[in-house]
Picture 1 (spheres, helix red, strand yellow):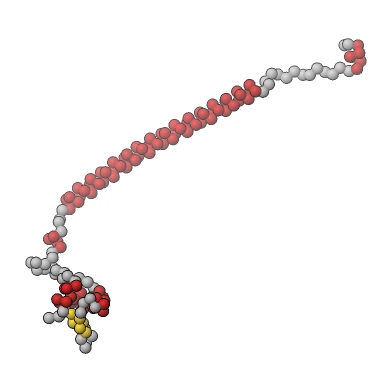
Picture 2 (picture 1 turned 90 degrees about the vertical axis):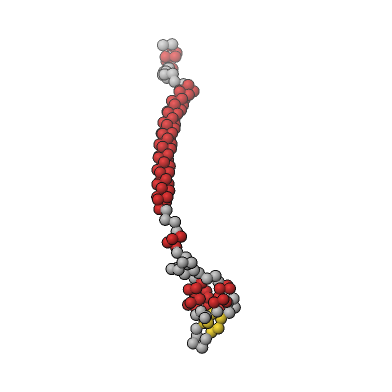
Length: 150
C-alpha cells in the first residue's frame, strides 16, 4: 500500500506542496506514475515526517477531551485582572489630582513671588531716585533789579 500526494499530506499534516518539495529535494523518495500521480511508500514518508494522529479512534487525538474545560478559572482570572485595572485607574486618578493640586499651588506661589518682586522693584527704584518735590529755580533777575538789589 502506498500514498498519493494528497494522502501523504493528510497523513503528516503537511501541505501537498511541502511533500512535493521534499520529493524534489530528494529527502523523500517516491515514484511518479504514468498518470502523473506520485506513489510514496508510507515508511519512507514517515522516516522524514511523523504521522499525525487522526481524530475519532481510541488511540487517536481528541482535542475536546484533552483540552481542560476550566472556564471558571479563566473567569476568576479575568475578574481579578479587571479588579487590578480598576485599582490602578483609581490610583492614577488620585495621583493626577495630587499633581494638579501641586501645580495649582506652585502657580499661586509663582504669582505671589512675581507680585512681591514688582513691589520690591518699585521700592528700590524709589530709593535710588530723588523723590523730593522739585522747587522752582529762582527767577532770573534782570539787569536793573540786580543793580538796585530789589
